[in-house]
Amino acid sequence: MRVHGEAGWTGRLVPLPVDGLIYASSMVMLDSARRKTPVPALARWLLGLGIAATLAANVAHGLGHGPIGVAVSAWPAVALVGSYELLMMVIRRSQAGFDGTSDSRTTADTLQEQAAQVFAEQLAADRVPSIRTIRAQLVGQPRAQRLRDYIAAGQES
Image 1 (cartoon, rainbow, N blue to C red):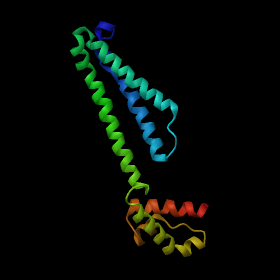
Image 2: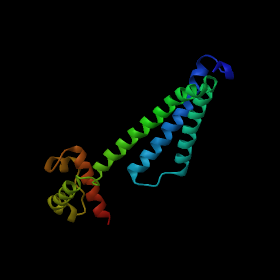
Image 3: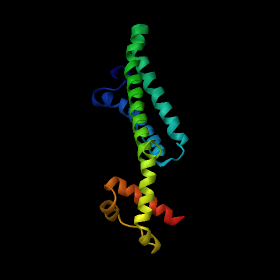
Image 4: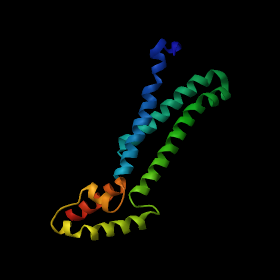
């Protein structure tokens, strides 16, 4: 970075905002996937801009060494973005398993029906059972939370 006027620690920190932009945009997209809401256009644009910026900087760095220098310089950016997006795909897919949209749907539906039956008296009295109660009578903590959310949503309808 000294060639471009940056020296010392500031020269080493310059790539962080670009990589941070890629990270932040990906996190917004992941959050949208988890909440089942549309991805904000700004997140998509900034992700594309971050990828373009990091590739452009790396390619510019390798230009002085010919096509092989360009390829070698561009590779770390491609590898970072590619591996990070693969990780996001895995996380999004695993999240789908928690909301009942994967093969565990039958199990989730059965538990939801069972929970509605077990807690019918409380629901009739307009009381949603606590997580502790659901966990004690049916399942562990994560499943109890999902069941409580399901039961509470049924009460609001």
